[in-house]
Every structure is written in structure tokens, then in C-alpha cells.
Length: 112
Image 1 (cartoon, one colour):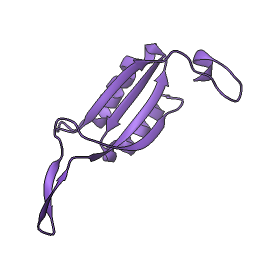
Image 2 (image 1 turned 45 degrees about the vertical axis):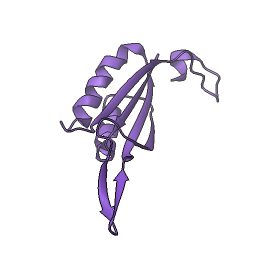
Image 3 (image 1 turned 60 degrees about the vertical axis):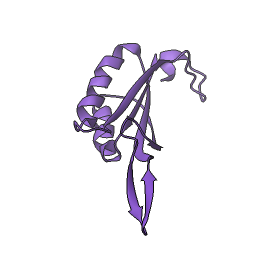
């Protein structure tokens, strides 16, 4: 099993959520995040003082899926979340050693 973490623009929340549900993803965790990448934010003036805004709002999707689904889901995430501009986000993939469903104590793929 693999964990996919996708950090995307906030306006991509609904389109990406719908695309993942259409792809039969059985579950996901979505949270608001703040961060910066290569663009390192920007500066604005507020009441005559320059303010550096280096934490940009993002949305974080977390999925745990069978390894065989990873490539397909990466394509779906990229196709849905891409705008072609700096700040589209990143996808991180990491191994998951074990999953346990608390209610039934099922383990592995059955728990996902």
C-alpha cells in the first residue's frame, strides 16, 4: 500500500474531490494547509508597511491506496489540479506498512 499526499490550490478542492470519487477512491482525508514552495510568497503593502506573505493557502489530500492504483491516481491528480502556473502543488508518495480498521480490526487492504 502507498500513501499519496497531494498539496494543491484551494480552488481545486471540489474538482479534485469529484475526480477522485469518480475514480472509485474509497476514502480520503482533506485538510487546509499553509505553505510555500519555490515562489516563496510575495510582498504587499498594508497601511504603508511592507508585509511579506510567504505562507500561501493550499489544500492537502491524503489517500492510502493499493500500489497498483498509484500511477493512475497521480495522472488524475495532475490532470485535475494543473493550471500550468507556479504554485500548482506537489504530490508525495510513501509506503504504508500497515492499516488497521479500528471498528473491526481488519488489517491490510481489507481495512482500506
